[in-house]
Length: 472
Image 1 (cartoon, rainbow, N blue to C red):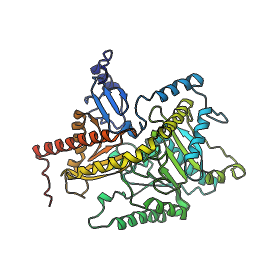
Image 2: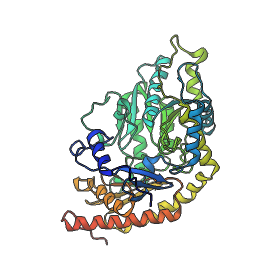
Image 3: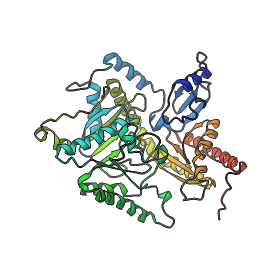
Image 4: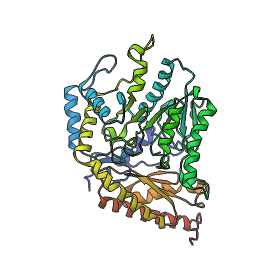
């Protein structure tokens, strides 16, 4: 058990938070009344609240604490780099040592000819930069009509004005404005929701055809890019049908549409590799975006990695009259963040964590599949150390109703009482533990989740909300 912070009054902290902090995805009806979980310490795969209660962090912060909490190597690296050079402007021809070294390291690990890197401070910034680059690229090639962006329902790409417009999670669409004139959504590739009786092969063919049909409907001369997470993470850990992504890449090549692989979640070990695009899914995209696990969440950083083919077409002797790429951030390539990212890569590779994930990932998925015997569980899906247990209060295969939407929050509440943090979203219980999780840790996670699902079932039955379906 972590020591209590006697110098901090948890009640006072909670009150200060409720009064002054506007959290991401705040419910404005309850933001001043709902008590937050005040976190104080963390070590390994565990976090502790201000009252000393200890939890397994089943979501790795937010898909990002790959090497675990409290890694002294990362803490020391931050301190040493801050002493050496805490910051300098990245604009123009100003380089710093760790940023240049990190760009080289990412280029060496990225697939194909993806060798040029721009830095941001988040995944949102990395994706936003990728879309701006796509527009800039086609403008340089005197094809200014190629502006439209194609994404998928259930996608999540960020929280800037542009990337928020690209998010395909309907429950996230609220009172904000969105750049809908630029963004077009394909139907979801969630096979769990496919029509009854449709084979996986037919479903995959249909989803691939959706992309080509959209490009032809908009006109290839108007489409700049297709943006896809290899696995749709916060939309419900949706694993695409086999060969879906390679076939989508072929279609993009056919119509001169840039393929942007959003690896903000899947990169840096979540699927057992530094990058998943080629090593897991067999594609070499035009652009890769990444963040989160790049620094294991110890400090904010994102990166966008571009193909040499694209850079060559608009630089050097091919550059236009006004060739300035006026996109970047005050903290692009921040030396402290870059130093942490380099050390994080060293730990991931040097400590055998990638190999460990390739061993524990299948075990994690297999143990979670055993939860299918519970009546409330409709689907269990995932890959590596990212997974989703989808609860179903209505009939299996039906679109989720209002009763389904509240289920995951109930499961999470029961799990917290038992010492596990989940990520609840609608009917989805999402898991993405730190990559250092062991098989024994996984057993504990699955055990707590099972107990929490059973407790939720019992609550729903007692409240008359749900009756378990008969299973024949």
